[in-house]
Length: 249
Image (cartoon, rainbow, N blue to C red; front, side, top):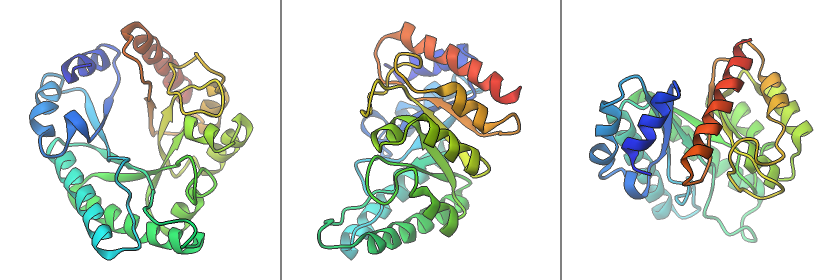
């Protein structure tokens, strides 16, 4: 949908922010002109940028590594221009798995994340790291981020399910690391697939997850739903408000 419609819907639902993927219509080269006016019309709505997930953060080839980091820095510059409070990044890589072992990949990704986190700090944009579906940085792999960087975590419910982590595992992780969790992508799924269904349309146990965050948690909840059906989106935002109230209570 148009950015103006999305921001209007978020504003009417009394949500604090909208999360936008900085790619396509929100490419960093023109996001200020495509998204900026919609945000200007709704000053109560903040922004979280999602850095492009098609661009890895690390490559074993120095030229490629320089290029991908420059791309993410460009996105962070654009996010700062729009006063984004945070940016979500996938800890992905472009290394051939058979040629590089997991410790080497993990070290390379952590080095790149450390650079991006520091760059975001300079701009006033908090860089948060999301669990991805496979590789060293699934839900369990976020412990590398906790131990080796100061970054906040992003927990994605669909990615966790694809990785084979059920509700019990997800709830346990959230309870253990809630002090480092800054952002949660709530999206439903009927099985081990990243479906991004409206909240309540799948089998994710959101109630247990929210309970694990606890009443003192002050991070962000995001309904990461992919559908062109506005009533389904509005229903997800209603559920999101309920979950937010549960967190406070």
